[in-house]
Length: 332
Ligand SMILES: C[S@@+](CC[C@H](N)C(=O)[O-])C[C@H]1O[C@@H](n2cnc3c(N)ncnc32)[C@H](O)[C@@H]1O
Image (cartoon, rainbow, N blue to C red; front, side, top):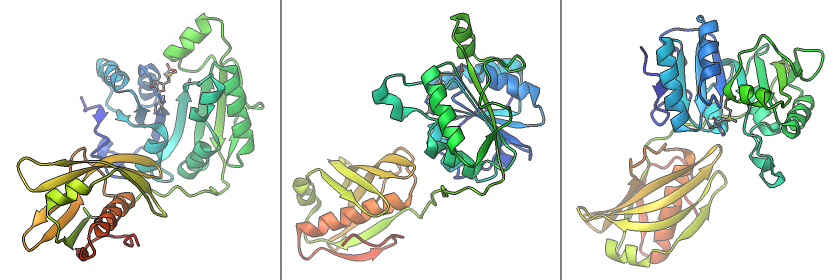
C-alpha cells in the first residue's frame, strides 16, 4: 500500500505528481475531503486517474487514510494544507484535470463571510490552474452560500455551467458525502454546481513562489551578541513583496547564537520562522535562517533577513554588511 499521507512541508513547489504516483495520469483534486468517503469512491471509479485530496484538518486526513487503506486503493494521496495555499503552490498551471469541492464550510455569520473559500479570487486561481474542459464541481446545502457561489461563477468569464442552469438540486448519479447525507436526512436542499473551465485565457497570474538559496549576511559589529539581544524590541517591517514582525529574541545556551522569532507574510502564505544571529571571530555577525519548522527560503524570508540587518545597523554606526547572498535589495 502507498503511504497516503504526503508530507506537505517537504514537497517541492510545484509537487512532482508523476513521481509521487509513479505514473502519468489525469490528476483530480478534492478540496476539504472530510472523512474521505467521496475521495475513496472517486478513486475507485477512476482507476486510471491520480486522485489528490487536500484537507486542512490533520485528524480528518488520518481517518481518511485508514479508509483508503481498507479499500486497498493505490491511486490516491492526501495533502494536509489550506486550500488556497495548497492549490497555489503544489499545482502547476494545467496539472489538475478537475476539481471537486463538497460542502465547503459555509461560515453563516455575515462577519465571517470573508472566510468562505469560494470567492472571485479563488476562482481566478482555479482558472489559472485548470486546463480548458476541466470540470469544477461544487456542492453546498447552505442557501446563502449557494447564492454567493452562483454569483461568483456567473461573474467569472473562465467557467461555464455544463447544465442548462447554474445548479441543480438533485443529482442521483453522484457520490454522496457524509455532510450531504446529514443535510438530506435533515431535509435541507443541496445545490450542485457542475461547471467547466472554458478556453478563455486566465486573466490573473498566480505564480508559484520560487525558493531561493538559504540566505546569509555577514556583518561587522562592534557590539557583542549580548548587547544586540539587550537592545531588541519587537518590530514590524515591510517591503514591496512581503511584510512581517520580529516578535522576540532567544539566546542559545550552547552556542553564541540568537534566534529571532519572526513572522513573514507574502502571497500566498505566512511563515513563522527563526532567523539566527551568530557571533563569528573578528567582530563579525552572521545572519541566517534556522531550519526549525522546515521554513521555505522564499523572497519574503530574504526580505526579512534584510530587514534584520537594517535593524542591526540602527544599533551602531559602525555596523556594516561585508557579504550577503540575498536575492533581494537590502532595506534602505
Ligand atoms: C463541512 S466539511 C465537508 C466535508 C466533506 N467534504 C463532506 O462533504 O462530508 C468541510 C471540510 O473542509 C475542510 N476545510 C475547511 N477549510 C479548509 C481549507 N481552507 N482548506 C482545506 N480544507 C478546508 C474542513 O476541515 C472540513 O473537513
